[in-house]
Amino acid sequence: MSNNQTTDKTPIPESVGTIEQYMKHHVGLDKSFDLGVRKLKILSKDVHYYYVNGLCDTQFIIELTEQLVEINDHEQTSVNLFDLVHNRLVHQSVNPIETMDELVDEVLSGLIVVVVDGYSTGLVVDVRSYPGRTPMEPDTEKVVRGSRDGFVENIIINTALTRRRIRDERLRFEIMRVGERGKTDIAIGYIDGVANPDLVEIIRKELQAIKIDGLTMADKTVEEFLLKQGYNPFPLIRYTERADIAATHILEGHVIIYVDTSPSVIMTPTTVFHHMQHVEEYRQSPAVGTFVRWVRFLGILSSLFLLPLWFLFVLEPSLLPERISFIGPNELTNIPIVVQIFLADIGIEFLRMAAIHTPTSLSTAMGLVAAVLIGQIAIDVGLFVPEVILYVSLAAIGNFVTPSYELSIANKLVRLCLLICVAIFHTPGLVVGITLFIILLARIRSFNTPYLWPLLPFHPKALMQILVRRAVPGSQLRPSIIHSENRVRQPKQ
Image (cartoon, rainbow, N blue to C red):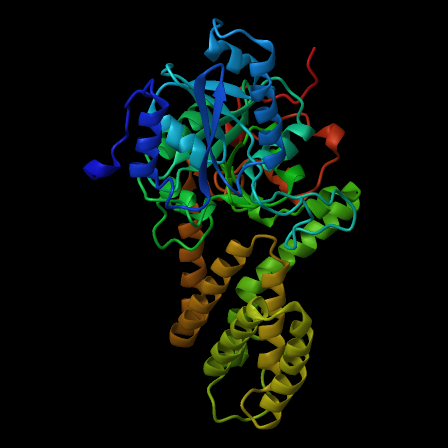
């Protein structure tokens, strides 16, 4: 870290003029249009407060100013002005600070700092009003029935949405600032006495050890610092934008990481099966939820293995039983099947990217062009055989069925690797490729949690809860893999 970026522990000067000069030279007062200072004369002494336009609630500031100005009408000059100002700041969050570093950080975070001439202590008043949207249902985690509020880009609102669902006095939100220049607020949410204290301490230390200018990419940057997964494509943490999902995982003993400016939160620790669950399963009856879960598992498996298996049958028709010997292309083509599959798969990726970048009003028209014109014409001109389009489409639907976007992309990469193995080595290639894939997943650990638990290591009761959605009254124990301090779910006595 360079010398000019070291932490400034300079005490707040007693002279408000010295503070003003410091703000001009170091923070850009009078140069940055949004940084301002309001100067008041109260009982013959100077009282200043600093603010950032756009991050503060102006109405709050006006009310505080009125309270301070009224001091001149009712008090004598002999009173302790600092204590009087402290008492007249009619707000629930007023905290004293002692250093200029704290003063600058609080002002740039959207709070105001009040300083009184002759006193070396500042008063921080939380009047933040960050620009943003109201809570609404996330586009990627919609349900037929259920709450429609979701996380937004404001960390204060996000923690409030969680506390609204968990009114436990042991719920903790530890907040810190990360980034030398960005100074992004990050909060760790957990229930004291339920969450694993070792996990909480590891996450706390890892966050405090982050050295970076700023977290402009918010939670994704935090994830890369926490996990250091390199080029492993599989997600080691789970994101959610739904407050009910975050609250459920906190009650299970998970630790949640909230990053300001991000509408999603990080849930740790997670296994691969966490990425296959969806809130819709718990908004239906256990029987319907189990059925939906099995269909989803089938879709995920088809996104991984359907195309490589069909391609193997194309290369080695003798492997097919006689009753299904019709599987395979019935038309001759000049383009190898594996090339057709890769072209079609990459073409679907083109369409996915185009849908993201296309305005909503035009996305429907783009989908019709892609589905009707491109697909049909490609078959008519002989670029693709119909079965390639069929199986690539089924695999793509399996990707869309996957609740976790990160897991669906990782599965697509695995599918392409399996296709290459089959194209080169045929049956041995598929067997060895699947074996290596399972070994890769078995070797992954997220915060010392086995990625394939409860399949590997095998835990029959926990695996049954994953395969069959149990009723809430029957789920009395928290998952053992989280190592929570209190495994039994029960009301407080």
